[in-house]
Length: 223
Length: 223
Image (cartoon, one colour):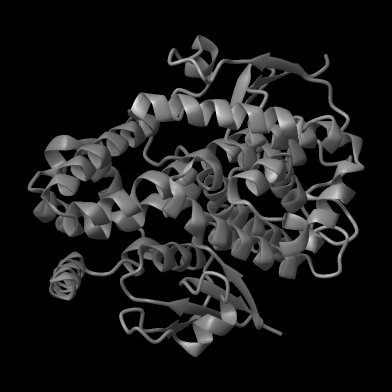
């Protein structure tokens, strides 16, 4: 019997994108169950499959849910270990990869959101912070093609979904990422050459429109 | 050649306590390198070994640093797999354990601090939140002796250091944990019967005095 894989999904989520990339790296077929996260009514599927956090992504594997993107990616890597390993096999290198994935989780996505959603003072601080964090990541990348070395791996999967927000970040923060973090931009282009990545990331202009719509709605609610 | 293990440590940190428990579960000898986290001057050892976050714990294994408590505990479990496994061997159960350790990281320690350090309104909300999170954890524990079932494991290691804050929590929030969360209190007692735990956790009254001193200092700095 084959594996049944359903991804509880939302098109713009960078966290569901991570899971899609991992599944595609492994050559696994999956069904996407898109839920509406903008609506105030939570999807019954989401409430059933992730009652604690009520958030996407959830990967339902043969009926059993796995939640939280980095945990799902590790799960996929452990179950389908023989193809395209994402985490290194050496425990020390594995701890190193987990450290950087955790850094990305803490420093990148929530800060990025403030660059385009925050008020001007918050925005300025967030822009400074995210550029600083990108530079830390560039220094970790060094001259390697990918964070794990020559192989696209766990840290790359964690970070690459931010690239579909590069345009929104630049517009929101009024700066050029290519000027500030050229190595990061080159790395993102290199990742985008992989079908697993290009097929999984949403269009950057669609993300920009979506972010601006959301900002307008939030603004009018606050008035 | 034996393994050289040095733990960059601070006596009251619940996160270094996790690492000590994991090392003791595995029967490993280690040296503790206590740093002063109260001082405004960061320890050179900490800056060298964890330049990104500059936080304890760091486990230095044969000269190489591993940072972040849950990552260190996984590292210990992967390197010394044959004795007292902390994470289950099944990938689905492993993902489940990681989910709850992540829940604890997000919901427990930072909220607990607000119960005794926050202003009265913040304090009230934090108290409500932490009791709610404890109840979620109690429901996950169910009738099992430990979170992983009959075996003391990864989720137990993640959560048990909070028990040395129970007294401070109760005094700060003016409530009885035994009344609100009796199952959690029984679970903590069960964990404390293990030498790995009782040897690794600081005295609860010493923690209370330390927290109150810190609160006083912060208060006088804010005036």
